[in-house]
Length: 343
Image (cartoon, rainbow, N blue to C red):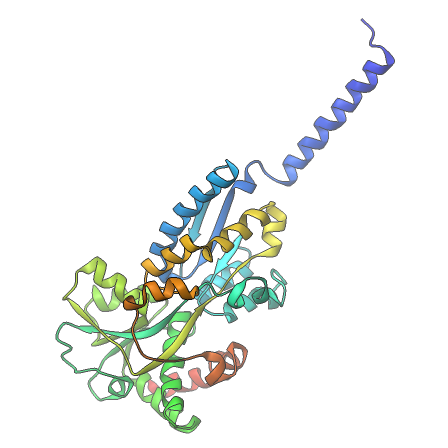
């Protein structure tokens, strides 16, 4: 039976619509908009496990849609380089701004102004560097000066691959400067500290394993939230937390990875995921995992969880992460020089 002209036109239009739909599906794979990959650093595993579950519930209630959130963890700088080299992260949650700046420098995956797109320079939570020692504190470690005494064995993550390690290094340097020392005194102090380091693990969790499970070292330098996790998992009484007189603010910035979310069609979901970190529920989860919330009211409700000490920032002591990276961590910079002298 022959179709009328109008019916033939309708059938042709339907074919065009079907073809366009198929092409759209090829460009954006089915359900790509309902999944995310968050590439993060070593010691956020437990936090994001709870946070992701809360976000999935929130998104389902808000939109009626399910969502799958996947995680990738490792040393901060190693993770950032993996994303720069092609790992398709929808969002990246690091522990220092320089590891996100890499994404702009190496491929324009994010804009140069990425930090201005969320509150508090895109830092929803912070931490600081403290010490973990063995039960009874047999080496009587009380402050930074004790870490350079002969016979005190130190474990910390490698500052070349780990943001955790970089913060420990900068905290030691800043301790000297904040107490009136000049660059020469700070360099001498950090050089002596590195001579006492037994193991430079690739990331914070590896350093924790070395200290707690392999039994190496007298003191572990790590984030405040990590020592609480150790005590919760291994039992209180096996180790002790030593809070130094001063330490560094460890900022934990986040961003969507623009080139990836635009390719996968996940920008709206990724943006909502990061914004949820700043929500009251998100900030409560932050506090429960012993990160310091950026929300002042939430922090006040949980302030008993956090050490009381004098804090300084990378910006104040070093002029920001770009300056710190160039002066201390680039190839051939001060860290490399000190490591060469410590071996």
